[in-house]
Length: 135
Image (cartoon, rainbow, N blue to C red):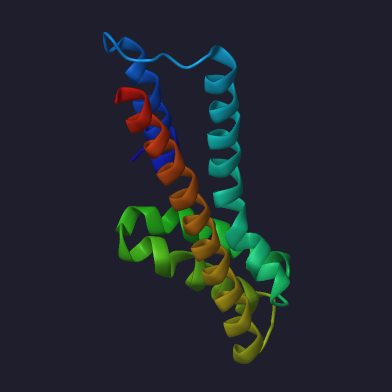
């Protein structure tokens, strides 16, 4: 599985090989490359950040990251449930009560949703730019 931002960037770069299209300048491609790499990295860190923001400990943060990667094996449900369960289990291991562990899990879920929204916006804008180049 390749995440959406790199695939969108590859599609943008493939426009360079279409005859009779406007080719973007190198700095535009470099700019979008940096943006898409940053979004991919931030997207993987947002569940851990959400966990911490909602009162989670390091155990919950690590649990959300591990849950994200384990959840990829059970795509698509695992992608959503994995960080929540990982944060919850991490907090339980740390000795937190179920209420605090649930809050950390919700924070992880909200971080995941924020990352998805960020990717959707960036990929949508780059797709628009790609189509604009082709017209």
